[in-house]
Image 1: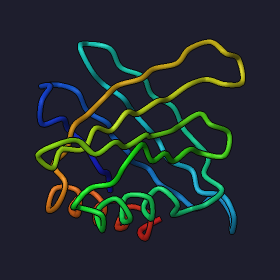
Image 2: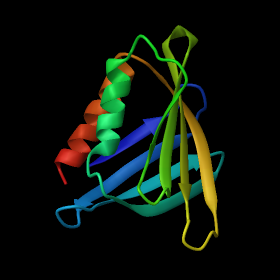
Image 3: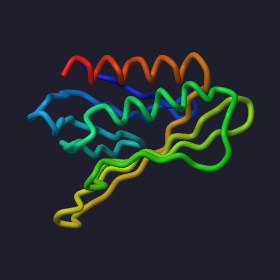
Image 4: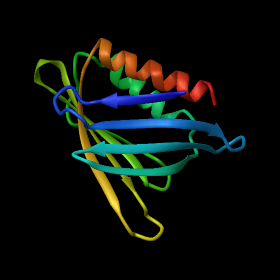
Length: 134
């Protein structure tokens, strides 16, 4: 199972989350890929809070009328993160980051845009299914 987040404004910008597996009771592993403008970054990440990312997006979907400021979610080692900001006309900016924090060898960031409401609800549901299937 996988979840692919595409950008409604930039063709080719996407985030792909897949291979979500329970490593043990506390740790879930997942593969993350960021793609934009011919550049691709990928990394396996460990999540201590096995469904925290799904809950983050469920809260965003519940607030479809908007919110002030920026909301963020990060993996415990901060190698994978997403920041969400609500904009006018029901658009949500999602800034994704992926990095090699151990060796400090690289980092990658892309921005995708999604519509609040049904699109965000669909994304939250896809993430819930991804984590529940692990």
